[in-house]
Length: 72
Image 1 (cartoon, rainbow, N blue to C red):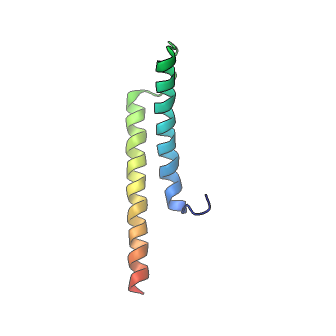
Image 2: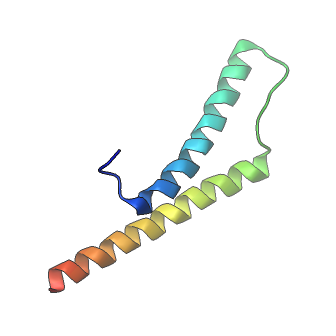
Image 3: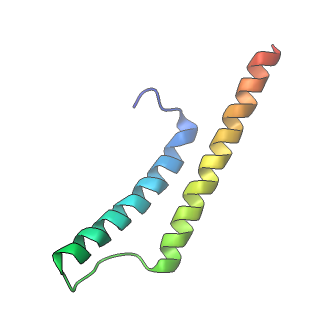
């Protein structure tokens, strides 16, 4: 994990939370459990949007850094 830049940590955490929710819901549905523990649809949507937006911002910052290094 030492190769991951700091700007990618937040998108990674948000996307991991989203994927954990999806996987946990799928496992609970496949096992036939009636007690489904999951976040509601609105929070799931907000989590996915935040993961996407923070990843786009991280990529824009990486592109900015790369263009500044090439200009030097």
